[in-house]
Image (tube, rainbow, N blue to C red; front, side, top):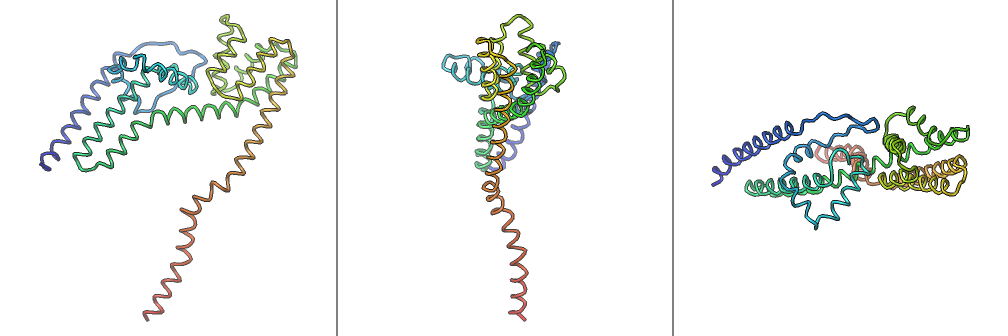
Length: 294
């Protein structure tokens, strides 16, 4: 029985691999289109494991479109917008891809159980299930951090431009042109493009706040909207917001510096102290053995 399984398992994996790559190639040829890339969009590529699973997502889309998945679709759509991947993959495909990865992990688990490697199968199953949401949260966190770092400098430039006599939109346009295309510049470019197409400025700023979901940026945008509605000077408001963000950044840096000694205790206990003890104690022990033996 063991000999039969050992000869049968490689054949099964080889067949699955061949079918997988043939279907993937067919799907890629079917999706070849010529699109004009928008100026304010940054090209993003999904991880390779997602790109391999997406061609099979079409087989389970009908499950994801069921009304019971409505809240999951809305939550995933919001997360994809916050991560900047809304133009790359939609919520239905992302959830379907997660289902496909879960099924593939279950298949690997069954095969590993037959091979008497159940622990490896469980690890692979857990990875295929938890990796997509963990990856999405990490992307959102990194994007928010990038926006938070760039926001005070952008506010300073806006403040100087507005106080020099420029209109808010003209100042925003000049700053967008002169800055490199990062996460904040991408979102500001998209908002500016929407305003140029006729969308009301307050509405475009509200949508920017909802799309990004970063608390400090939302605070600044809400203050700008209120200042516009109440007729308050935007230049003075931007200066105040910039000072507040800078103070918050300094406070956050001090907090992280204060947490560093606590976070370094575990690496010290696991890696540094054992090495130091070995270097100090082993020569003494060896010398003691030599003395006792001879």
